[in-house]
Length: 181
Ligand SMILES: [Zn+2]
Image 1: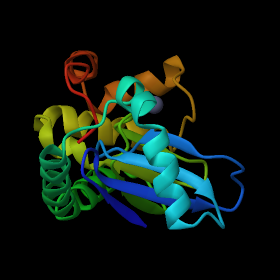
Image 2: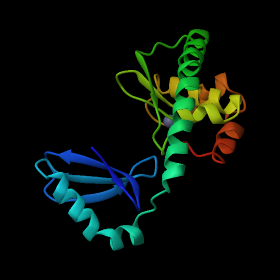
Image 3: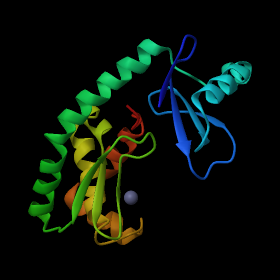
């Protein structure tokens, strides 16, 4: 549910069956997010929000409503571009170097560029559409190499290096960017 609040903009209310108290946090779009017990009425949620205004103002970096909406639009655009590009680029490198993965997922977490699970699912962050192509390819090759090495051992890095000679430079340059949209 979304509450429209004159001060905080759109507030996301999540009814959580396991929650036994009310918790505030910030969503990836910079919106205020409230987790409340399952049977909390909207009236109660609003009342609690009103009682907590001072604490929220002090502690949570809520973005103003216009930048929340700008971020939504940017995310939508990046997701569209990522869908048209990343799965194909992954497939291209996998074919070229003989890797077999099971699935590809596009993510928009703020913390990582990509991941590879033991059931051979590769996740790629849509924020990769904002970094230069050699760095994007480095992330793809890094995750593909995890199909053979689920660690960052020297054997893993040797494999990354065999496909991307400049991986050390790419890895260093990638640190100037953050994955969050
Ligand atoms: Zn890794």
